[in-house]
Amino acid sequence: MHEPATSPLLVAYLEQFLQDRDDEAFRRRVAARYSEATLARLVATGSDDARRAAVVALGLIGSFEVNPVLSRALRDRDPIVRRLAQSALWAVWFRADSPENVAALHQIARLLDDDQAAEAIRRADELVARSPRFAEAYNQRAIAYFNLGRYEEAAADCCRTLEHNPFHTGALAGLAKCYLELGRMAEALQTFRRAYELQPYDESLRETIDVLERVSR
View: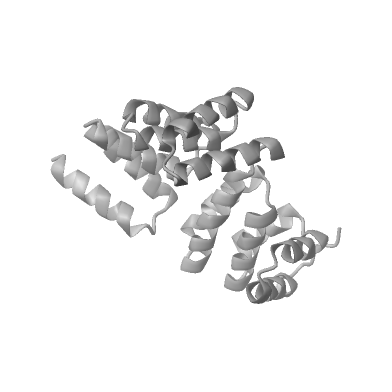
């Protein structure tokens, strides 16, 4: 595979993608020229435009192995890179299993969108039994438990998510919210701090931490 030493071509691919919104064409162009390792290096060392393009590319074609790379991009100096990295991470998390299990996960997410939490839990039970290392399956079940007010079970599933994916910002935020609902303020504060370490530019996290620190004194 040809791997360009510089990234203008990748940036051009992104510009074309932003015009035509053709996901498949963008995937083909990137996959023909860039390896996952090259894209990961560009996320770390490229120009602003190159980092943005590489993050978008990894969001579309990256495997779960790029999870740490995209997580570091949440601390990038460029706010656009940070925003794109968050979207890319969710995309990577949602496809981190077999096509069959990914399809099942999307069904669970649709059930949650339709406020069918109980059915989402039933489907998620089946999915985690079939694929016990699929982190996002636990996270979606945690959301369902939280929506039903079953905070202990939601917290347990957030912890299971983090066992398999320690960079899961959504699970960290969800765990902290569970602790708040359970009145476990010290653990909530500690968990929000963990989330802030991954997302140091997130002002809402910083404000929440400030409030909890004041009430904890």
